[in-house]
Image 1: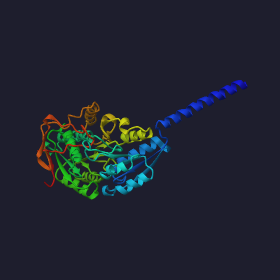
Image 2: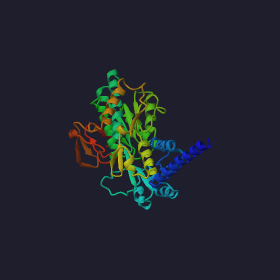
Image 3: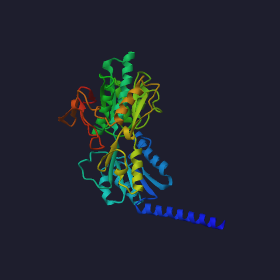
Image 4: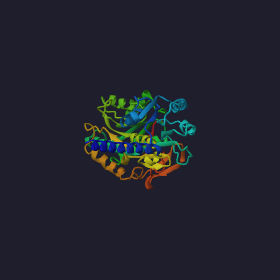
Length: 398
């Protein structure tokens, strides 16, 4: 009996030693047991854009638990980025994520070569020399915009059939921050999604010239509604446009399509559907890569362009939330699913295509003929389509 007991103990000791040795070898090969992860937000979680980005932080906490310490800085303006960035670096962050538009991140990255800096894409870096530890990423938002446009188109189709509006009243409105290619690409895809259902649909765009102003956004939305828009969407950071639609619904039929955060709670009677960029797949993969001492782009599932990455529905970087079945027209889910299936099969070329001519708003000699199509996010995560479509898009105030 003693011999058996001794043999068992010896066997367990050998197995334990092997496990310890294995873990040591793993660490020698670059595996880490713990990370400090930083997040810098341009706003706070009360705004849809930052709230949506903060879900990635929550996902990291849930997945890795005590293996990570998370440090955050909120309400950091682009021109105030340097100080909080350096603070997080000095506090020992191994990887830092940013959702702002500051060039400071790229500029300071070389000073901290052992830290990985991951910034939501804010410009085309495909022809730019960037530090090896500087990364950009973004979900291919045009896909979600197009699908949400289909939902808007189905509702307009229903309103025409019901006699609520006529075909020449098929007008969608868009509250936009700035005339950047990211914003223009998004609202153009939204309109083209609606026109795939109701070809007569046109769009009015109102710029607020700020990313985040409840008063400006709500006022712009109210004006668009007064100008006859029956469905609104936005590329700004507050709930102002959704509130404007909800209040207007008391005296006329109008609906709202959200971006990044569901508006069903603040606009239950008018919220139709929401498209959101999902930051979680990239952020979780990047943290996993650093934990395993791997290159981030070797772990991320998406389209890789150097140290830049993008993806859409096929890798879960874009999704649709909260289709309001009480408001949505019959057949909306099926129409959305059909388009999503195309995107999942890698086909996005059908979006920016048709008998349209677009003009660069800052250079009238720069035009784009969409009869041959335009492929968005072909070589960069940052959207580059920046043309205003003649005859179907009107910019308010021009």
